Length: 260
Image (cartoon, rainbow, N blue to C red; front, side, top):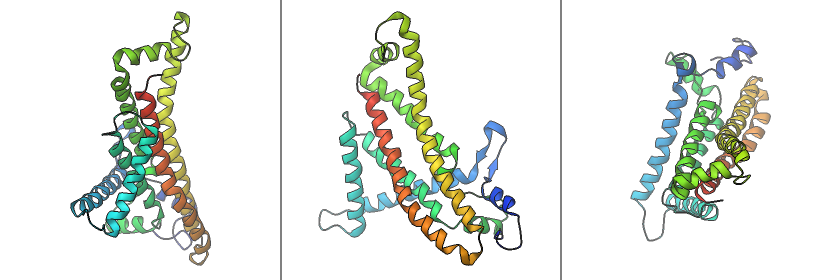
């Protein structure tokens, strides 16, 4: 797509074009193919890099890549140790996956906004967005997976009886008249966790993508200073949002697993 700074689309058309997904279907059953593709692509990159490092891992002096991966794995494992006090056999790999998958999603936001839409247009594809975390469908999909794990770990840590007891009698105690309020508050709390996870990640990355698009509408010679400054700031946001999503996932699972 031509730059909005030159002849071509109006600013409104330019922004709308960059915010439109490559999709199929209608209504609730609409699939954002670009989100699915880049989510799978970043997932395979994560798996491929860690698998390659694991295959070549040595007990001797580690290479730079092995050393980098080991530091990150240890960092995530320590985060799980500090927040989750149950068996970590599944939670630690989950936290590692969540952190690096979200990190790679966010990292795509640093690619120039016109590059992939332009390449797609050469292949006859009209619309393309490449940042999964700027799509609420992706962030809610990930957070709903966390919600399912919260329910599973509630049963795993407390048992069916303990889960039901907490649902009925927390936080106001075993007063029959207050049971409906306990149930209502617990349901609201359970729903609020994935909603906050999804909206926090989506809001930050959608805003960042929008700012990059607005900067790209400036004349080419005027893009460098604001573009560079925003990219440097965004480099701090990328790992921070991944860390927040990972940490809250660990904390929510810990709260679900432990009795109150």
